[in-house]
Amino acid sequence: MMRCVASALFLLLAVIPMASADMDPCLLEVKACDASGLCVGFCALTAADFVGHYEGGVHYYQLVNDINIMFNEQVVGTLLAADPNTGLPATTLEYHNDPEVHLNFALTAGTTDTTFQLTSSHVTFDTIANPFGQSSVGVSVSDRNHNGATLSLVSPLTGTSESYVNGLPPPPYGSGTGSLWTDILAGPVIAPMNGTRSQSDTTGANPIAIGMPVSSMSSQLNFRLTALDLVSGSSTFVITPEPAGLLVLLCGLALRRR
Image 1 (cartoon, rainbow, N blue to C red):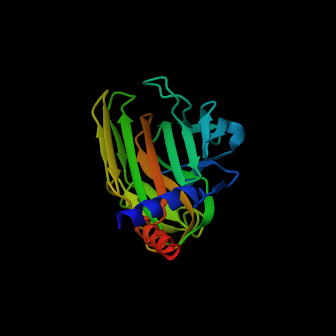
Image 2 (cartoon, helix red, strand yellow):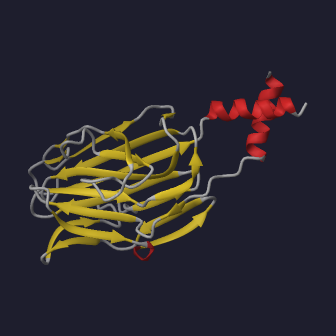
């Protein structure tokens, strides 16, 4: 049996090619909405807004300059290129061929409490028949105007970080036809006056079955942030083939070749 497993793993590494992922031209979409749900600010970022490179099956992008989200000449939010607390790059994207979607971000609210929505690019790839998935998210909320800070949910969502398969988010969270797979990080996240509070969540330590064939993926963050305050964070969504199914298949191939 061990010989079969070794043969199967060898074939897995030597014969099965890496997946190849493609992205939409819009790499990141950001919306800012008021208390009624009306989205008053919008920006769609393309490769021209980032410095980027491709290496080892990964597309890397780093925001070049801060992006003000505007409504009637008023700044309703700002997507930051650098984290004001650390000076390190804040808004970065990684799209992996494996496939994986990684989004790191930092933004500040305008002069009123604001609902933000960040949507990744639509990543497409060859269909994975029995996929497993894993999602994680972490956020840090910082008070910037000496009265505390709160990141809260957008009803009826039960989390701040959503993972979609087979399309972009559908209405009312987008114009796509994707299926919601996970909705994690319930919150709220409340920072004390002049302080910072962090919180994270995950679907688990190990990948779990998605339950349908998958040929594309996208990630979205939805949350409400108190006026003038700062939130930074990261989300990750990874899809892999079913390891056990591949192993059984390759063991069968190895046995038939004996």
